[in-house]
Length: 552
Image 1 (cartoon, rainbow, N blue to C red):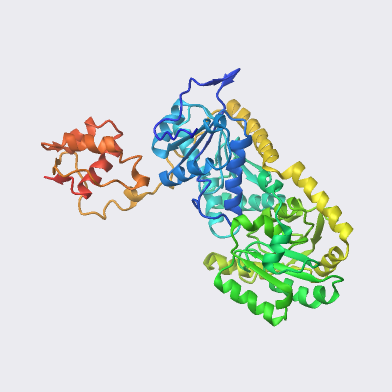
Image 2 (image 1 turned 180 degrees about the vertical axis):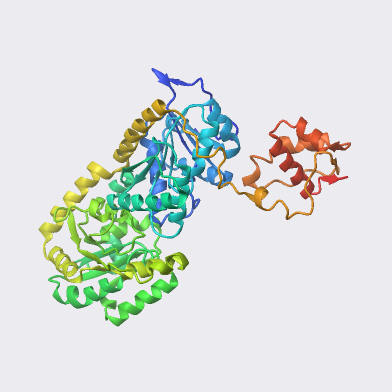
């Protein structure tokens, strides 16, 4: 049974749960922002898996998904059919375009609106809530990467909006929460007001199916041509010094300290996305250190092979040095697969690895001075990240010693693997993490009920400087209410682009053409249309654009 795809209505307020009103989740965020493409970025994986877990394990009576892209919403609806949801759970899902959202917010009560980000959507949604909501509900968003110039813009915008005391940004790591505090302080200095909501530390999770999935070790090693008796060190993630980690120091340490001293045959498996230029640099380093017999490259592998890649390995090594990393999903995936972890003592990794229990943390050192600080606002984002990461050192001697310790101790690897698996089952499966999110949402919703709807600092969103406000003078003419238009008698055989259909609805287009059959004023057509005036104006212009109406 398919979920009902309702673009104009998502249910009625009369639906009740036992003992009270319907508990309704809402979002305006495209949780499949890359559409049906493979998910290699951590943010894309996290948002996909969050939505899947929410619909699988959440306790809401109804889930409303809305965003500006009709095709993205349709892709999301199609994707949910692949998640093994029961018929009863699929019937809880509703979809609506932005066009229909104001009416739904006015007629229906919501428990929370949650976003798979924080800066790009939270401020704007705050103004929409203040204008249309029938009840106060919290807005929550989650952090992913916190680097780059745009996060400063986001911090200024969310500080300017101020938000409500029952709104929250979910920070996926403790270090990320501290970074967000600093960003919001900077945003407040720019905006002249401060974010009124909370910062909550809530982690991401790992998909339960992936946590339970076991890859085929023999098949993976045979395909990669890795000896059965080799101890495999896996590096999993984007292979670029600009976005994840600089692999140069690891390759140097591997060549000079690990390979010569290893008590067992050892192989370094580098697996993840890489551009042609990143691969060229990587292969040059491998050749320079004479490591070709000891290194296997698995670049841009299909998502379906991840379980086998993990199964081929014995230890995950992740000496991350880049502030683009805030959490560390690859560490959770490795622990779920039974791998001990050797990782840098850096960012969210500090939260995920219990040093000496399920892995080892390697000390990191940052330069106290940034020679490019005054140029930050002018730097290309990738170059800025390269400069940042080159100013962070992961202790190579510690890295080699801890890795060699694990290579030579089968029992230690096994005990750490068991501890890691136990941690994932206890704390990081999405089925458990979703319950933690719901607990915080319940607390925020209770506070929202006490406080009431909070207005923004201004009635209208000052950042809504759209085309009509900025470019109205570009066209030589603007339609006037007193102008007469006439239908050309041509057939309406052009279909509006999918994204515009919520406004350019066939019924509206046909009605306008019918009303203009013998000529009519724009004012009369707009007034008689069964649609908001701005929709009718827009539709009239579109009909002129395609030669279906002429301006007399």
